[in-house]
Length: 275
Image (cartoon, rainbow, N blue to C red; front, side):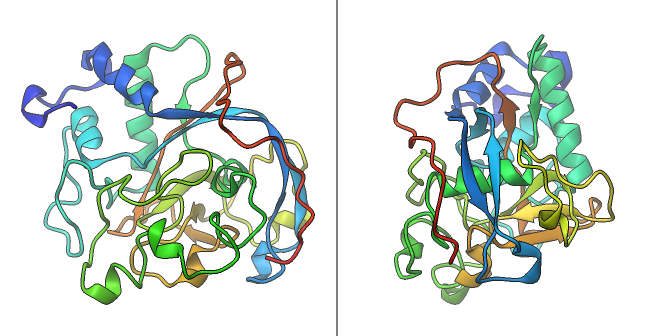
């Protein structure tokens, strides 16, 4: 574990190799596969359900933490903000899409990667990872009653007056070992949001709309009810937007990696259209 006192606003190439290694060790390799994206049970922008093919890639087991953000950027944009708990293992919040991209650029400078680089996940990658082979509204099953074991949300955070995002990794992971994919904080995706994008989405690794006024956020947060934590539920904000409810996690293409997680679910092509 890195202690904040060991670092003094280190940026870019000044970041120690051990820090980059720790970030890489927190990335989970996910298998390539196909899945049915979207839902017939939610909002109009979740329709139509459509088949998507995803290449294998790496995704952070947890969202970027306050400690990681401070080590890279030397700032604490969440300080003084209402509804934030200051702790190293809590998600970095009050960060815009552009600021998340700046963090990633600093990481890539430090890592000096010759191949694939850190980035945000696409919306399709995010939903594929969150599902982890599931075809239900929630990764753990059809019913919402066990959601508190996997997610911080209205029932076990806001309703209990714990008005902040909690430490990452404190709930159960999904079947692919990813924590907090539903609840705790919304997560930025790389895509521009378009309400009717699914009607024209390509099958193979859809990148999202090429333009727009909003960026996609996914996953729900600690203050929302289970409806907004459904896997297929889509959100969006201006890329300049920032608040106590939105964070992000890292992704990386894995075309040069063949060691996908042997414990990950087998490639699945879902048949249940009712979510």
